[in-house]
Image 1 (cartoon, rainbow, N blue to C red):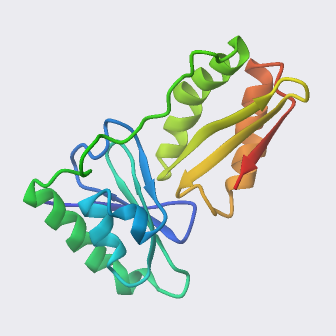
Image 2 (cartoon, helix red, strand yellow):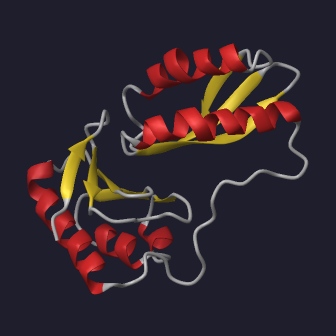
Length: 185
């Protein structure tokens, strides 16, 4: 098995591409060892010194390192853990499949339009950088759209530029009710 790696705009996050499906049922993010117990792979990665976050995309695993640890020290152990997991045939998640972002039955027409635009244009673009953007809320009175950044996008130095220059401009263009986009931390 050959696992490719890719850098992301976030210097603390590296993408690992095992050459097979990872999380087709929906992306999943783990920010602590306690949360990682839901996944054998995430748990194995969190056992490595310097790993502070794990994100599963459709065909990749993004790993966040603590800034005090260089990739030279932890890249090989991460590669070994990812390879061991996929070679073993173990499931990605214990128990139930991860939840995918859904569409609530009471979503307004504007919110449905926002979510469709996120799903079709924004999320595929940020997935290439090892992250994800999720809908959090839309205030119809102010036009403020709140989004949640995950994976490599969370904490990335260029995430605010991505939100303002990319996502906000696109949303304003296609959904005139949106006046501003903000990141929820």
